[in-house]
Amino acid sequence: MKKVIILKIDTYDIDFIKSRLTDFIHKHFHPKKIFFGQDKILLKPNLLMASEPSEAIVTHPAIVEAVGRIFKEEGYKVFVADCPGHSLSNQYLNLIYTTTGIREVSERLSFDCLYPDKIIIKDNIPFAYWVDDFGMVNLAKLKTHQIMVLTLATKNLYGCVVGLHKSYLHREFPKAEDLSKIILKLYKIINPPLNIVDGIFALEGRGPAKEGKVKKLGIVIVGDDALYTDYVISKLLGLPLQSNPLLSVAKKEGLLEEKVEVISEVARISNFRFPPQFIINYFPPFLIKVARLFFKFRPAIDSKCIGCGMCVKSCPKNAIMLYNKKAKIDYKNCIMCMCCQEACQVGAVFLRRNFLLKILNKFDASNKV
Ligand code: SF4
Ligand code: SF4
Image (cartoon, rainbow, N blue to C red; front, top):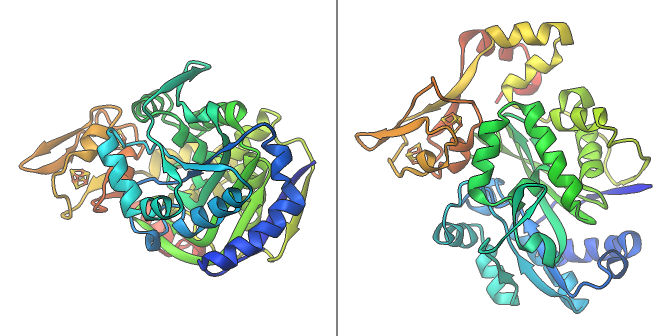
């Protein structure tokens, strides 16, 4: 039976988080057993972009520190790594480690920050080498996602694929259902035995980057399986399984058949705001296809653009060019993957909705963002 625990933790006080997690991890997840034979632990936070921890776009460094200290005190050598989609160079990954506060924690506690310098191929997918050599603790962030509705523990595994190949996957599998199949493929290959999701401050509305809104949920979720952890969180937030692309594909693939034991310190969370275009998912299945013809949205660039070119490099379809130091999208080639939004450090990429979708969103109380 799978196990998921929802803890009420409403502060980023490191000692408090550590003391709460230590008891539950030891009592319910038995680190020496699940990481048997391992002496190196890899903490895999969600480090989507170079953003401040208070923006709730990345896993908070207090979670990384608290979990890292638990394993260090157990005698493990602790490492930290992520491979964000647009991090095309170690120099940029350095900026991410520094801005997110991970560098400071790692230097103070002698955790090593790793870079995807070596690649290993599994099932034709190039992974960063640390997928194989370490016991992995998946440290995800609780956020909305404009394509996948939510990004939690399973989607965080996407950051184990080396940067440029993620662009390729986005290009080949732009739809949420197809991307879900790829993410589930990664899940079957990696499936870390310990998953911890930072929901103390989450991101709601138009996540997973700068367009999202910070919301205090005051929870940390711990599970022994990434997919079941997501399943329990999705339910806690009131999202029906059929409205979560990843979970509905997982269900069809027979990946959600086991029983799950849930220990929870919190009741259901109401009024969590999903991405505005998500309202289409409430339609009866036969109407969804038709609705998609009328309710349109696409990325657009606003005046905050500083012409840095990060979106140009991250676009899997080469659909962005710089004109007069401003990014411009060629919509003929755009596949709506939103990699450009994740790459933009100043929040200049936003999702423009057509007027029908704007009107529809006005009637959805959960989406007034
Ligand atoms: S949209 Fe953002 S990432 Fe693209 S060039 Fe402008 S500032 Fe840079
Ligand atoms: S313009 Fe943005 S959304 Fe469109 S294909 Fe490129 S990265 Fe994806």
